[in-house]
Length: 312
Image 1 (spheres, helix red, strand yellow):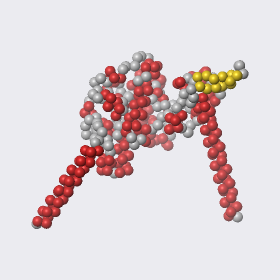
Image 2: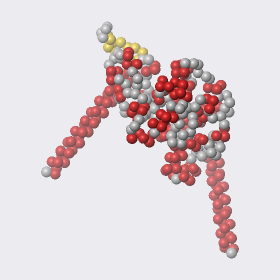
Image 3: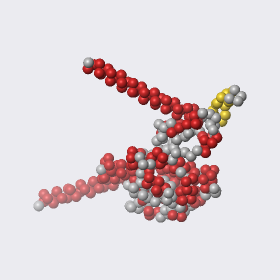
Image 4: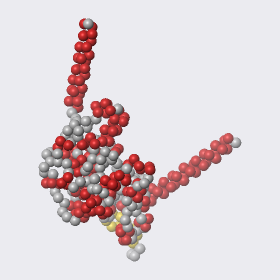
């Protein structure tokens, strides 16, 4: 009797597993059906008017990077989770392009499972930003965060340079692109080099610091501030970053510092954190030399104290 129950349970588990795999396979098939065309330079379709198969070039704006998609936070989604199910047929109806897409808060808002990410607070900060103040509802999250390829880099990466590169590419995707910038703003894009001609060592700053370090207000309760300031309110005081009380500790290095201290303790976290010297890269040689000098001084104090004790 015991073995019969065991067999029934095993069959039931296999059946459930089969249902899950079939559902997942169907989901992947639906997802790949779109990428069959939207990941290639060209696509083919049956022309019902001529009765022939035709091949055409894909609009470059609609070609998706499948590698970037597979690394993004929405990699397991179906295309029709955000886009209309009517896109599954081709030719696509022209009026589908006019349908508004789902916003981030449509999925993430009011959901306890996403509470740690504070999407509602981010929305509040974003509505204070120059982007929203000038362009209103026309400027959405997707203008900076592509739903297809977005990664939570600042929260998950242990490499500060990767965080800087990823974030700055988001800003430059519009601010360094004449067509995209003019489409949103309606006027010519100012030249970044000339606008930042007051900044010493421009290339080093652009490479090692995110744009948002100077162009946002630091909010302690958020991992990344979304209140983009007007250019006349941007930080231009070097001391605000190049000091012991650097604003970079509360922005660029925030997650790295918290992560290290949680894993290694406060003291070890500071000693092993390469961002502890703010405004530059820590020199391994100087770090080692300072540790040796400290140990030598400590050893000298101990030996001196022992001699005094023995002498008494």
